[in-house]
Image 1 (spheres, rainbow, N blue to C red):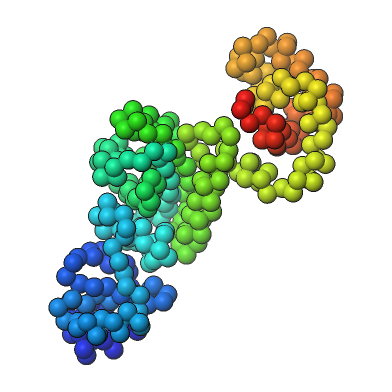
Image 2 (cartoon, rainbow, N blue to C red):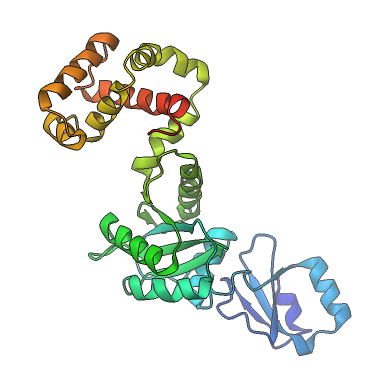
Length: 305
């Protein structure tokens, strides 16, 4: 599309990837599909020509978050947030770890801190005032939840902010990668509505409440009625059942977490099964009961769970 401009601007640069260096001497344009980019020296363009180019093409502007000053971060910014071309990569699979800060903080200082904490090879991208991405290639040395939690604690202690993270899944670098990221971005955004929000989120922690949120209310009323009635009759039972399910239906581990005798836990679990006829010791029964717990606490226990 831009090749016809070579006659007018011999020094034009035409490429099929997001420009690595948006310097002040050139002005860049892209087409409607954003699969071709053209850079022209500003000194070669008159104001009238510039106005015409603005009508024909879309200007490629420096990202509002100027802290993304490396070619890698700018390429990933364009790819994931502006529907740009696939970045220059070496690996086959990548994942995105999203983060946000509850409080405002200087991004350049945060960037410096993250760079000291993150493993070599990760790419840091800021895309909003308090939000950013950590791009990680799949290898033998990847961040686990405990390491991300340690990073969170350091950032919190150094900057007096409250960070939260969403660890995405590894995906092959293909045409579907931006769609996978968009879904993970939606889950991370939804996680802000979870009442007992954890510092580290994944699809495992967010998806149950996300699915429940999209379940029609009349379905919840029908499916969980017996469970709700049981919890209203014995309000302490929900905590026992939920902890039991979150600890792989292990009586001893549940008793330890609740500082209770295991016989007391067993009695409560048996009572729940008798009242609801849901065998929460089975995998399927546990799933149904867990969804019921989430629904009940959302409607009835906003300040206590």
